[in-house]
Amino acid sequence: MKTPKIVILGAGYGGLITSRQLEKKLRNGEAEVTLINKHDYHYISTQLHKTGAGTASDERITLHIPDLLKTNKVQFKKGTIKDADFKNKQVILESGEKVEYDYLVICLGFEVDTFRIPGVEENAFKISSFRSTKAIYNHLLRQFAAYKEDHDPSRLTFAIAGAGFTGIEMVGELVEAIPELCKTYNIPLAETRIINIEASDTLLPGFDQEAIKFTTDYLKKHGVELMTSTKILECSPTSISLDNGAKLPSRTLIWSGGVRGNRLLENLAVPIKKGRIPVDSNLLVEGMENVFCIGDAAFFRKDETNCLPPTAQVAIQQAEVCGPNIIACLRGEPLKAFEYHHKGTVASIGNKVAVGKVFGLKISGLFAAFMKQVIEARYLFVLGGPSLILKQFFKTGKPHQKVAVSNHK
Image (cartoon, rainbow, N blue to C red; front, side, top):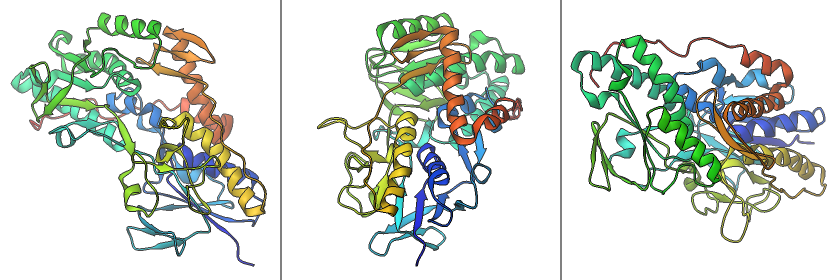
């Protein structure tokens, strides 16, 4: 009898946790599981702002995927997804290789949405992947080095588009990173600017007023210029045009204005709703058999018009149901309906301060920052137990070189 093949596309939060669920619950020889990802590392996406600011080492943010898997249960394949042939049950890689499946899990993550604002796609830096945020930090180093030569103020004007969860975390890291870079390059801190631009009338939309006030006061205290009710109209390599008529001289626009489903989804023969794949209560793609979709790629309805947000918390909870549901399909057992339980949200503002709500309790300051660490540790525990937590938290290497030679870009 042919051994069923399970193929998982993407090794983000959803893909890795689904793999772990299958490792734990599949019987030996019950199925062949293949996890496909374009890189052989998994990055902790909730920590990407630290890579962008250079406040954490690369090793703290990344995990080697093969080290996380039990190879007798799950095989890892490095490859980039090109297409899927649902009729013949095959995944096609860019290399031309075809991977057969009986059960497929699509968890391809998100892409940054620039809303077609002129110049943003070409000139702004995105918080979308480990590589994209490494590019941010290397760019910061180049701007500091170049400023020593030409004293162009636009080089030390750092703008962050979006004051939601991701944007505020990026601003918080820059508040800590910029003074250190000023010391390294012997540049007065007063010659730098950090500007947060937000289209809505408040920071942290969706957070309570206490958290918003705490964050606003903290950022202003540390010299951050907050521009709410302000839209970006255009971005060039050296300036940012705003809807209030101002033109900001800046060579650094870090974009956190929104996300959308992976564009690859639109090339697949699957239903699409608002850039994501509609799924039923069991996380199966609507109208398809044995094809699951979870995480940022999935459109899971929380009511008639809205879907769950593309967050790590949603992806992890869906994966914890998706894995057992695949096994239930294998064994001809009933599937479990997914129910999302929001456990709270904590936004860090640097390493020592955060705001949020956990299990209904409003928290801020140092205690909130500690809770953020607890949340990150829990994810590592699910992936690899206490040993992985210790391994990651004791990695203290430097992120990159601290001094760059200017190339005047």
